[in-house]
Image (cartoon, rainbow, N blue to C red; front, side, top):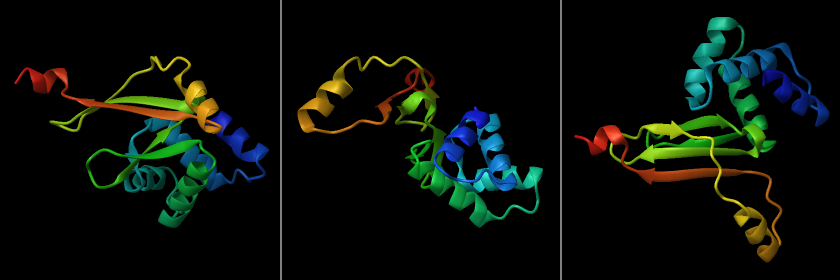
Length: 139
């Protein structure tokens, strides 16, 4: 996946520097839902010379290109998720703020219908469903 992200940056004219490579590898290895501070800490464990601003600028770039999206999970800080295949799905527990990822995309032709009706070009989607997780419902 980090190779795909590197190619996406390169095809859009951005250099894949050593620092960006470490950031991309860390994002992919540790999965989604990292805050910028968590990512910075993990990156610094691999390469102490990479500063916080480099991480933030790379996050901004990846978000601007639609490869990453910030989500707010009730913690006050943005958590960043990789937009693999242009979409991402969550169940979010309103009791404990737990986030459960799922792969099934049952939107069918809804995005195309909405896009056609409103003259909008959809590039991806993030689906969040809110409710109570099994653990909280059982207590």
